[in-house]
Image 1 (cartoon, rainbow, N blue to C red):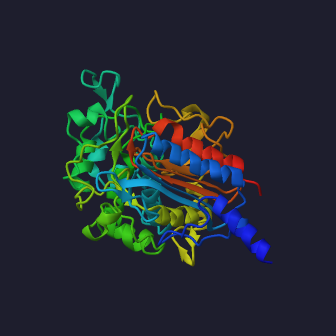
Image 2 (image 1 turned 180 degrees about the horizontal axis):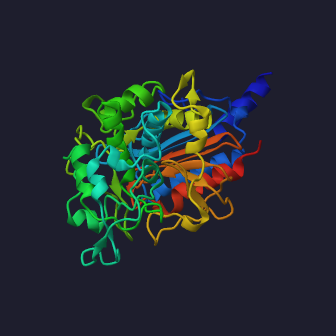
Image 3 (image 1 turned 90 degrees about the horizontal axis):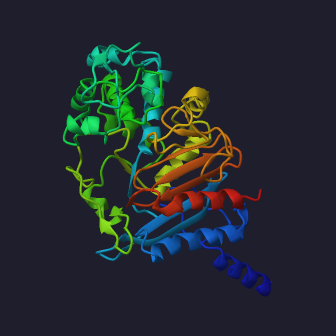
Length: 421
């Protein structure tokens, strides 16, 4: 018996991540034998993370895998704050950027379920200025092009699908006109967006855009609550997502993961330029497309609720039917492949309501099964959930130039190839 216990302890020590404590608001921790992922892959996953840190490509990482509702791998490596020598923690707080979109989509679909909103509603029903938009005749020359009326109005579904014809928050078209400022509230931003021409007719193309932030404004109008208050009451509190919101308050600053600029050639990591209103201050702009912060534990709970059909630990945030609709690709073949822009296409990926969907597993840049759902953030975060294997992969890092030389995709591929049962 003593020999058996010794062998078991040695096995646990050899498999990184399985002895880590579950994150504070995360899922329960599984026993080592329940991982269902090859131990060789688990070691490779940890080695991959450590190598990128040792090579100075990222400051630190928190990465985790859950299967069948339990955390089977959790690793925190490197630095949360290099200058202050603060180690990365399981409970570190990250800017999740575009992983905010799925949370915003859930809020809108809740209102659809309640009959307060319809996917077919024109946006102008809630924000009248959207009824007077124009389309650029030549979007390749946006500052010189003439304009025309759109073939139809933008609908709520267009916003959720990124088919509204709106531009990205960082686009030259919006930057030139100073459309996006964290100092504006959602009402002010929405009116500014409505004053800029569309770069395509609604429904005619997938354009990765600011549209989910406009959804947040519609949630405010329909619910009568500020967007952050609505999310707190209807998503964060029910799912026990205690560290998710739009900024990091003073009492949690010791858990803030700093954002770094990826090094070029032999340069070192440097802190990214601060936003006009830093992530440590409560911003007027409650940006549903890209403005939230969260932890790996909180986001595990959100993804598990979606994987469960809209429910977790007795708290239901969406009906099973609404969840299925959210997690189904709604784009026709003619609009695929989607991408962040025409030069950054994502083969094999379609789009549901506020979230990516794997539609051709053989074309993806990472290991996946058809039907997986998830998305990434512009500071390197990643989340994917696989209904087939009941696996959730979440990767948290803060690096500008989010690809980080394939780190997150390679990590996801190791998870996928290591699933053994």
